[in-house]
Length: 155
Figure (cartoon, rainbow, N blue to C red):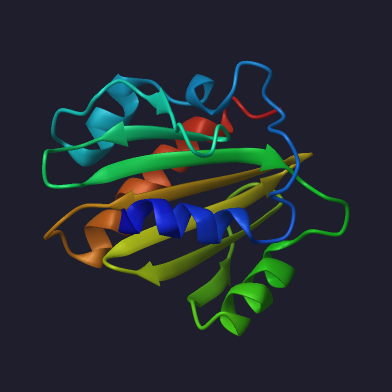
């Protein structure tokens, strides 16, 4: 349930109100094998989230671990800097980073979750990783690996 709450928080950042830009939806950006390779353990098939259809969820284990990908449209003027400022207003640790898309940011919403958000063209992609018992460094590495694979399919 906490994971759904963080996805809700992610949906409140600027630009996330628009429909996804990939016609096939968020699950078209990653394969089960790609997520499984990143987490080094079996995962479920990606499923569109029943509450937020812009999100594709991959369950990692029976303990609540998951990797999720959110795909929405970018509103003109959105940027990593603007999103980080908004997240900080909500007391969420966040920072702008380089090396992904047009602009990118990371955030640590709590509960052991790590997020990587990227603006690329007209899209905003957010990867959220929650690996129960894993260090933040592992979750960040998974988010980066998964994001690199997903961005290849974002136009």
